[in-house]
Amino acid sequence: MGAKVFSAAVIACSLLLAAILLLHRFIPNRWLNLGSLIETFLPWFGLAVPVLVVLAAIRRRPLAIACSLLPALVWFQMYAGLIPDKHVGDGDFRVVAHNVNAENADTEATAASLLDSDPDVIVLVEITEEQRAAWDEALADRYEYSVAYGTVALWSSYPVAASNEVDLNLGWARAFRAEVDIEGEPVAFYVAHLLSVRVNTEGFTSEQRNETARLLGEAIADERLDRVVLAGDLNGTVQDRSLAPITYQLESAHASAGKGFGFTWPADTPMARIDQVLYRGLDATGSEVMGATASDHRPVLADFSL
Image (cartoon, rainbow, N blue to C red; front, side):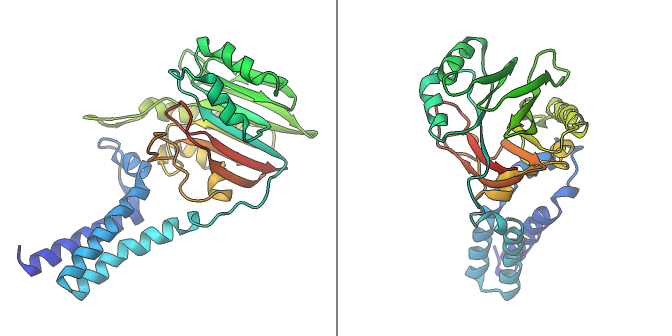
């Protein structure tokens, strides 16, 4: 390949990468849900930056080098805020959320890992009927109050005043609301496990997940309490536009008070943060991803002050 053609290819790839990073919101979902797929793994596009810089430097073409630095600047502007640790304190209460995996046969060890962080509220999703008794046995001594609907559950050291299923139009329970009295202040906890997405020959198949997000977003929008926490597996990142019915009205505890990208799935080599703790009406004081358990997801922790 000639030097000019090589440099032109580097320039074109650099400009395309910068455009994807900067204008990803304008990438349509009409074809294979491409926009949502790109947004789910958007941080990983930064891996192409050093490759382009090296290729541009090989030919020592000033224009190619300048263009290769453009996506680096865009990526840094988008994600530099995630690098520093924004933890500011322990807060008034701690929430741990975990997709425990329906095939998880080591409830005792998984529970011990979660309890080590001394949470006030534990949110678990993807619990099977067979696992429920084991989880009750593991957590009942530490948590007086519990709520469960279908495959989602919550254990709390604070009183639970009321609860109700949030209907996601699935025919079985995957979300609920619980009003938890924390030091005399009512906090609405939403626990949810949205439907899974798939990447296959049809693209990023997420229509059912998107519908559950819409219904959950409507329930949260109707919430009468000022203080709200949503915890669970949303099967999507906060960048995914299809979760906008939820994310437009709630903040990410990790974005506010965590460090790094906070990837949670898959547990062995996390590539995306699909397990979330979102909130409003509170101050997030800390957030982290906990160590791997016997699940295929990693648990997440968030501290809040009233």
